[in-house]
Length: 360
Ligand code: PLP
Ligand code: COI
Image 1 (cartoon, rainbow, N blue to C red):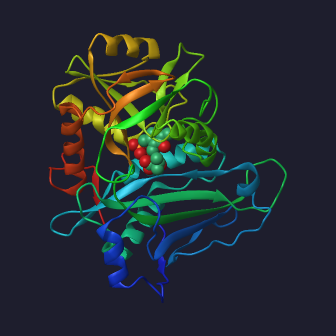
Image 2: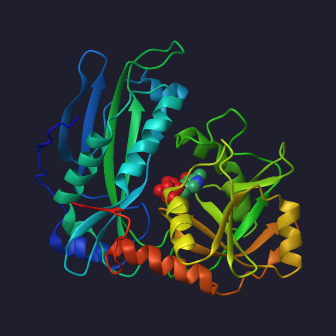
């Protein structure tokens, strides 16, 4: 199903000088472009009123379900401009499919893949001048859906709004890519069995804020969650999946457990690594096993991956006072190769063998 997007362009866009100043040093998620894509849903009309409109506040009834019961889901994907100025989106259909799975879990309206992809394309088409082109830079898109019905009974909303906003993005962790420090979380969980961990919904991130803040107070950049009901199996970070390089030639990542988000970067890396001749294993890795592998020198590299993080080396894991790894170790060769290959495909420097880039 497709819709045509009305273009209601801003009368007050950022000046070229202001935009150039922002693009000279993009941060992550702090500045937004001039427009947003918006589509409404009601049971009577289905998805309708697709439009590109000036970026700005959304007016909602204070009783709207999103404010009370957290019926909200989102996605994250990036648009890159290649050396010839052609703009591409990385695997938008995969994000659209994941949003559909999240919607199904949160009992929200099913958004057809074409409407999701068209909303992203239309917005990026209007905002092409906002795409930074420095190493690792992109235009980060944040599609999201909120429940808008004003009703306090606990049941799924009957109306929704889907929106896409865009923000020029540099490195998620700020500055140049550097090895990050990870806190091993033994007290809090971001998701539990039967919960919403496999969905990308705001509530998962709300529950991750306390452990994230506590970890930051201890000097760490992110938290790694364990599954205490499954032998402390390593799950994922608050906003990224995790990989280990074992014996130099095997890439290991925790298997999807139902409480881990199925990362699109994760799945792309599994494909690229297998093509490079690395063995790939999606399996249960307990903290004890990881500790033993690390102690015997068999884990040579650990890295985080996600749309925002791309591929970010992990220097050390902090389990209380115990430090596993070397916080100052530079990124290892496998981490570097995978990061370069993935960014190369995203930016058009490496051939897109899998048809992952959708041209805008
Ligand atoms: N895990 C969590 C909890 C995330 O928030 C993200 C980011 O989107 C990921 C993993 C990585 O997913 P993707 O590679 O699709 O961005
Ligand atoms: C993304 O990578 O798109 C996310 O949503 C994760 C977050 C750390 C920004």
